[in-house]
Structures are given as structure tokens and as C-alpha cells.
Image 1: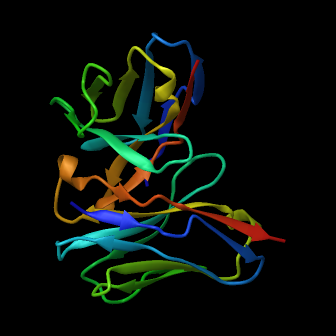
Image 2: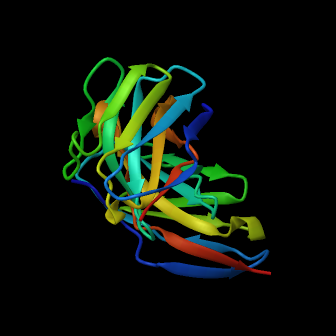
Length: 113
Length: 118
């Protein structure tokens, strides 16, 4: 499986600010996914990022709040904008690999004060 | 839309014993994939096992095996010879087959916390 890294691994931010999370893969992948895991909850898909096109957002998530970039086949960023304490979550990126199996990065733990 | 249900929030097992984690799902599709992921305290999501719906044979990976009942829409995970390192949150997940893009997303259950007693 691909090796996936995320930066930062964790951060503490003030409300009203923005944070950009990076996801780097050691091989070229077509689809990258961004999930959110709120405290004590399951994972929810934020958006799907395909290189060279706009990200596709799930219901309840909007581009102004969670802008995503996908400049090439190994990299993506997710920005959490104008943060509030409700944005405190773990944010995970994942990629599609063989046999339609997704593998995950280590996650970014975000706390908003 | 597909749903995944894990009705047991917590389970406990004695080290070296066997435990079964339950998962049911609802779908109108005939071709799909089911997964179990493990999330230890480090929060890394780790793939445990994968099942293709068109395969009747249950998947097995070392101490981990599944009982896949397609008609009943049931997908349970059996962990044999439990080890302390198995303590984690376990998520059952569903994925439609043959799609790309947003339709290839994973739908997760709420997860179950497994503790292992020494």
C-alpha cells in the first residue's frame, strides 16, 4: 500500500483563524479523500479530490469552509477556514489503492479554542 | 443510501480468547466491498480485512476472519487468540463496487471499542 503522510500531526488554533492540512502520498493516485472524525464519533467524508478538477463535496460541507487543492497526483491540501470550537476533530486523508481499497494517512488532530 | 450499523459500543475480551464484533448493513446494491478498520489510540486507521460481496468465501487474515452473510446483510469480525495490541476502536465500512469519485466513498459504522484484559 502507499505511504501517506500528513502535516501537521496536531495543532491548537484560535477561533476565527484558518489551518491548512497537507497530505502527501509516495505514489501517484487518482482519487484522494478527506474525512472528518469528531470526538468520539465515526468518520464522515468531507470531499473527494481528483487531480485537475474541483473537489466534490458531501452534503453539509461547503467549499468556502473547507477549500481543497489537488495540484498533482501525489499531494492535496484541506483548509479549515474561520474555525470554531465545533471544528475540533481529527482530519484524515485517504487514497484509493488496488482492489478498491482505501488506505489512510495518520490524521491531523485539531483543537480550536 | 447505504447504512452501516454497529450496535455494540464496547466489548471486552480476555487475552488469548476469541471475540466477535458484529456489523450489519443495508444496501440495494448487489456488488460492493466491506471492510474492517482498526483505530488504535494513535488514531491511525489501519485496514484489518476486506471482503468482496461476490465472493462467497469468507476472508481471512492471520488471526482475523469474517463471517459474511450476504442475504442477512451481516459482516462480523472474529479475532482469535486476542492480544493486548488488538485493543482499539474497530470500524465496519461499506463501499460500492465499480465506481470512482465521490461514489467510491466509504460509509462507516459508529465503531466499537474493544478492550483486551491481560
